[in-house]
Image (tube, rainbow, N blue to C red; front, side, top):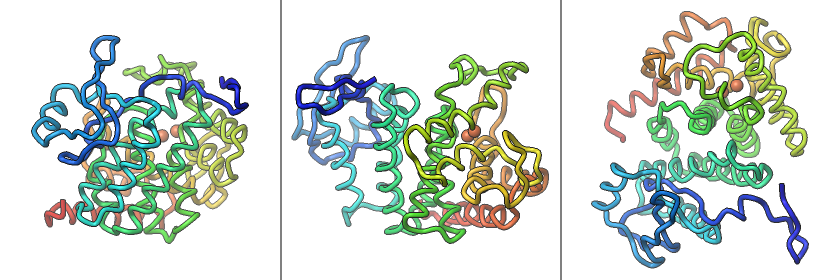
Length: 331
Ligand SMILES: [Fe+2]
Ligand SMILES: [Fe+2]
């Protein structure tokens, strides 16, 4: 919960925390960093690098292997960190693959706050800015979406999942003719689609085996919870529909409303596809993840009736193009 400081503005928990986590891959080697860097050892933050210095390629590679998750930046440098990433996004001498990596990695730790931080309004606003960076990036670099898709982590954490579903949805949305403000809205809706899981018990979210009936019933409430959060935060109807309708099925046997076919919001129809695709290609403790082609074949052959046929074709094309790009060594 926020509280008022002396100047009357609202301070959040997020700004009361002293450091925020960053991922090392979001830093560009050999460029001076405009912020201090800390390492967390036990519960202590140790000052590691002073602003103005840089990490060498070798050091970055070594840390990435040994301690990728323990780097922090002081919270007062949050804006500096974001403009550091933005500046690299518009640099002409960086390859689009390098930009894609920085963008994805820098976004992951911020998206994590969407699910972990008590300061939801700030986390949502920050996430909107992230989507705007992605939209600009793929507008300027049409091949950028293949790079981004190729970087998907295939790890199962709600925030990885949300970011990857957003990336796939931007790719599929662009293919389906979305642009500008519509594409931005779709990206936000996809990033927030599972936001209602904030209100589902963590033991259920993290359970590795199958859910029992009552756990499943609670899990299936996340679209309603998501709708409520989006309502409270004054998001648009399109974004609310992404949260509320992404588990509907084209044939009418989805949840929570059992909508049929085109009753389902077009953006939610996109997310239904990208959400399933991500689940199929993601490693969980009890499954072997499918590769891109295998997953798309499975969706086309076994569960095609659940999806909008035109969008399913477009998704196949997006992923087919990505695998071609990989074969041709564009990465
Ligand atoms: Fe969901
Ligand atoms: Fe999901």
